[in-house]
Every structure is written in C-alpha cells, then in structure tokens.
Length: 508
Image (cartoon, rainbow, N blue to C red):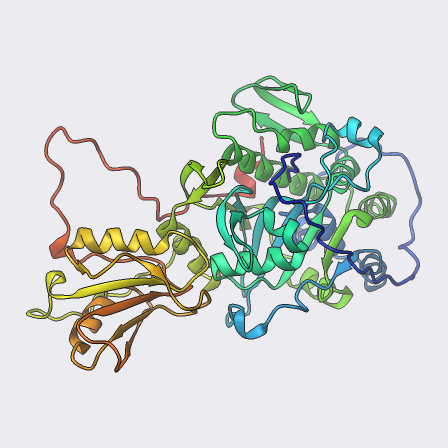
C-alpha cells in the first residue's frame, strides 16, 4: 500500500471516528524475539491457514481470520478502530448486491496529524496537514469464497464527487472521510461496497516489520531522493520503512500506474511471507503482530468478530493462485483539468466492463455481451435520430457514446448532456409511441439496456446511460473493413482487463 504527501487542494476535515472497543484478554502465548528462521508448512497446513480476508489491504485481517480461535478473534475485533461508514448513505441510492459476493473498499490514509516530527522524518513522509486517501483498492470476494479480485484505483482519477463536483477521487476522503469515499466509489463504478478498511502510514510499516520484512524485485533501478529510496535492479529484502518508500515513489516512467504495480507486488509479498513463516502458528509472533498493528486499522462497524470469524472459516481454502490483481484501464495519464492541474482519465468502456464483471460476480473479462435483436430489413443507423444523456456520476461517458454512435452512422440530434439525476441504475432507451422498432434496434446494441416508452417524445430516441452500461456494440454491417495497407495497427483491446495472480507477483 502506498501513502503520499501530495496535496489535492482540499484539506477539509473528515470528522472524528468513533471507536468501540471491548476488553477481553489477548490470546495466550510467550513473547520472544524474532528468530528470522523460515518454516515452510505442508500444503495441508497452508490450506487451513490461508484465509485471505483482506490481504490485499493489510496482512492483519488475513491473520486475524486464519484459524484463530473465537476468543482471539473477539479480542482482535475489540481492538480495531471502527467508523460508521454506511450510516448516512441513502440505501435507495446505492447499488444493489444480489450475488452474495462481498466487495471491500481498502484505503491507505496519508494523514500525518497524529505523527511526531521524528516519525515523519523517519518515514520520509513530510508534514502536509489534513488527510487524504492515497492507496485505493477494491477487493472483491466471490460468492463461493474461493477467489479474490483486487483492483487498483489511481488516486488522481478524475471523477464526479457527489455533492462536490469534479475532482480527483482521493479528494473524496478530504471532503467527507470514509463515508464520502464509499459514496463516490459506488457512484462512479456502480459496484456495491459491503465493507471498508483503512490503514495509515505507521500501520503499514508495523505490519511489514512484524512479518520480518518482505521481498521485492525490480526490473530497473529506482532512485528517489524525496522518498530516500535507492534500489538497484534485482531482488531486495526490505523492512517496513523501505517497503513504504517502495510503494510511495512515483519516480518511474508510468508514475501512478507503476506505483499500483508495486503496491500489488508488496501485498503479494506480505501474503507469501505470512503464509510461509511461523507468524500464523507461533502464538508469540501472532500476538506481537496483532498488538503492533491493530491501532492503525479502521473498519466499518459491521466487520465485527462474528463477521471476521465467518469469513475466516469460509476462506480457509484460498491460496495465492486464487487472488487476482488488476488495474483500472486508463485512457489519459496527463489530463489537464479546468483548474490547471493534471489528473488521470480512465478508459470508460473498458472500465465499465471491468466493474460490471465485479458487480455481477464474474471473473474479470468473463462477461458476455447480449446478441443483437434487430431483424433483417429493420432500421439502419441513419434512420434513427438519437440523443444521449448521462445518468451516472462518471464524467465523459456520454461524449464517448456520442462518438461511437456517430461513427456507426446514427443521426445525433444534439450533444450528450447530463440526465436529470446521476444515479440511474439501468440504461434506458426511451422512445415515443411511433418508434418502438427503432428503440428495440438501438437497445439491441447496448447490453442489459431496457426500451422504455415515453409519450412525451416525438421523432427521436433517447439513450439514458445507467450504472450497468458497459459497451456499445456497433452493428457488423457498419464496421469498417480492415485499414488500408500501410496504415498503423490498432491499439490492443482495452476492454479485456489484464490480471495477474498473487502467485505471479512473488519475486521467486
């Protein structure tokens, strides 16, 4: 996980987090210094231990749900900070979860307000006031509880923050803490967030140190004086402070995208180290691990001892090969905003495919598009006047569809505009009484859309984009033939989100 000292321009207070604690005794076990000796357990033991509840965010929660007794789980639960993340969200404005899967929003908070100047200097994190989210991940646990998908979200992604307007996605935390962060993520992705997990600078360092460090590897050297990081190409064993610098630095060619890759590499390394050492089996190590890191962890109120214990039991068979990592597809890394700073724009069609898969509890890239329903002899694009409205909080999706419709030969009656509300769940193709056939033709090109008759419309079809919008399938008859000889090749298909497993991310 990475934390940053960048200032988003919004440093509003996120409010106080209420902490609810219980006071059972910690699990029994002797205290001893770390031996540094690695014990690789058998496959059977590994399967019993591998409850990767939220390893993509913090090894703590994996260990806490990895076969610990109920008493220990209750003690751990009572020592985690809790925030009323979902209490103020209107249920009828949130995406639904009808699959039984669970999606966690995981945030690395870069607040320094509670840190001494000595700690700030030791971690090379600066002294910028206020709090922002920096490392942002969606962690999806499927219905069968046998696969985890971790999606890295760029902190500078340009989105519509509900009630605040367009801004970088990490500014949502500054506007309203965890609650505003969850509200924003749900609005722009259409994915239901079931649980929230947050860890700060010191918590991340403590977790890595409690594991005895982690192994990272580089194809090219990194030198970042600001982060006090100087690593040659190759494999390195790093402690918590070095791991923090490794995941925070932006001193590489792809900036934030490289940083997300490094975050995921460190997460995989933490998983591997936790599962291949005696951290899980040695009571002293486990107790020390938990005591050193719980105070830096904040979760939603529903992630209590019973929920953690249930997840630990359900996920006892998950292994590294069952954890997939991916990134939000990006269209522009250097988008100049109206206020004069640089943000990141995602690839709207590809991103919507990705999040539609997550919301539907499908493997990434596993969604199937609906077949066209138009019949031979029916309408053609040039016969259908169309107007696009964006009913979601994601900027730019309407303009993108405008371009695709125009390329397919449709007649646009005007430029795309925002719909009267920004929380439309399902995409609608609205039409007057005399254009039923034309609306069905258009709806057949937009998977999961619904044709809706509107008596007030006359002479055009209106497409109202909802959260379930993923793609526009241009009719084959309208697709141009292959480019002429000598023309540059098309870019690779952005719609298939490339993913790697945690096993792939281990250096060895």
